[in-house]
Image (cartoon, rainbow, N blue to C red):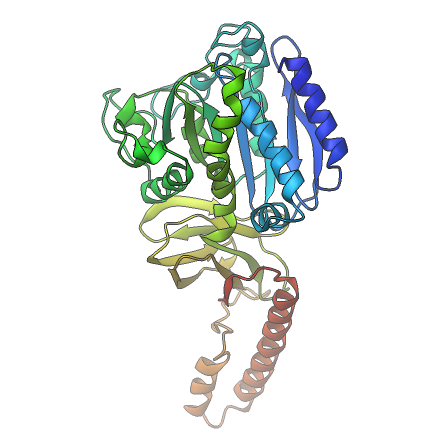
Length: 423
């Protein structure tokens, strides 16, 4: 498809599947061509307490297979939403955003770089070297993606490239520019996500060059200013770089075969946001309302932020392990719980207690199922303190009512079949 063909196909798609999709642009290329995105969801354009995933194709203009496969992915989901459980799961539980072409200018002249002769996958701020710090020099396509991540909180994403057959994960570079395996804090989880793609593929996991069909970026060849590392560091987004075709520009007749080889990989990667990981929301005990905060996992130096409005978080983790998960928010006492993550996702909702009362005194009670117990103990050691007794009764009763209300609200809001716990 030409750029005009692709634009028309995307507009036709959102007309045909208007109930579960919308079309929008995140910006324009150097020559002014819109960077069109299709969003697929049961409630497109709305904010929900659900994870979001993005696919980006055609980062390099001479690697067009991704743009073709992404439109096929959208059409497959539309055609199968009413009859395929996997399509239904994705539409109902994920906001999927598809940008088939980040580099329409490069594609039109069949060249790797954009119209300013810049490699877009070397144009992002780098963690090791001061590259691209001047905002005025950054390419419009790069700026569009960075703004996109500020507007939408993506849990995970993937870019589709050509020229090899492998699923690549961070880090993409090293501190000394040498080539060796350099894992990020979530190295285990990234390996897990990369294996989901490679093992669902027809032959990627059978690679003789890359064990299991996956590779650490720096171990393969270091790059700097890449989109993948920037997403993870600054966007809170777990991104893979997927090389999906040995031939960068194969004959169009091969596209149906390449699509069939990659179809389940593309679907299963998106579905992993629902099928695994620890998900939930953070609430305040004093008001029973969503509470923006952060979630950390012991032993992993990485922070996941809850949504500002809905306070939902989505923490991708490798299954088959026990994790110590802590939620916190300014002005509230952090809470920690241990979660055994099996093959299915776990919902862990946190109810946080204010650090201090309106008078500035710390609230000692945890307000859990044993709410008021420390105060009761104090009472029995001071039998004659009637005032303390009255306060104990009032605090315990209020804790009981508030906790009951919050739990009832959580019960009404929970629509997922995940194993659920409230902390």
